Image: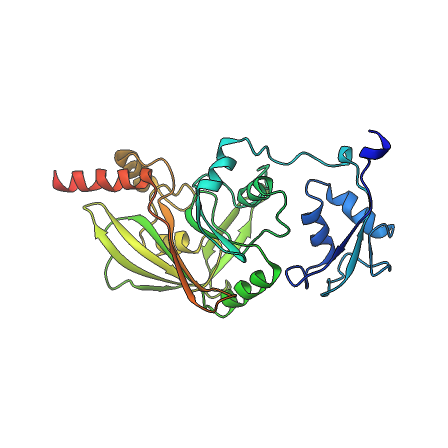
Amino acid sequence: MSASDAPAVRFVTIDDGRAGQRIDNFLLTLLKGVPKSRIYKLLRTGEVRVNKGRIKAEYRLELGDLVRIPPVRVSEAEPGPNPGLRKIQALDDAVLLETDGYIVINKPAGMAVHGGSGVSYGVIEGLRALRPDAPFLELVHRLDRDTSGCLLVAKKRSALRAFHEALREKDMDKVYQALVIGKWSARKQLINAPLLKNELQSGERVVRVHAEGKESQTRFAVLENFPSCTLVEASPLTGRTHQIRVHAAHAGHPLLGDDKYGNDETVALAGKLGLKRLFLHAASLSFVDPASGKEVTVNAPLPEELDVVLASARTQTNG
């Protein structure tokens, strides 16, 4: 590398979109691919400075702060996900709605929302790879890897704060579609059962109904009946891990394609209907746009492979 190609010191002025963010998280986003150990070393040694002074990793940036970013050689960075990968490229076509403050993605089943636990990249890393110049991209909420549908990503720190507040105040409505075993009774509309999350030694998360768990509520409504299964609409009133899947199983109607909370009966019926994934889809998301104050509802159509399964169930019904 010649002297002219060497990276130079950069100075970044913090705007409203970045104000309130911790300096370590800001650097991890800005210096994409640079190992965390290197980021924290830059902070410890004072190579990163705010308003010409040293700061700690937990320092929260304020509007107007001037951040000094030292030269970081390309050789120190780890390569991110290849934007040429088919799944990552498909994310561009999966955008349902985009504004200056946020993106709603129709997440495909089988793709994690973020890297980790043996997954090298997820939706958020893919979006950052596709949009290397985007100053801020953060997940507002999460979907299980095998769940498809509406996923909200903030493009500004201020939007992320507003959406997190909406989630805390239960002002964001999420509606899912799920195919469950058996005939769901119209009377079983609200499942109110506390959920306790355990992590096994393997790192696998398992959730169960337990008196010592966190308050959890899911509202269910029947959309379509079949002889051996029911298409239901599920609206989680709280946001616990695996909530819909565990509540449905607790009601005696586990989801088809659920290899964690299902049983031999769900496995057999899934095979009969040609289902090769979890039948859980985030069909719609409603929230208030932080910039306009208007109510927004985004719908994600049911994926073709799930439509085919329903068609198969209807055929068997008619037969």
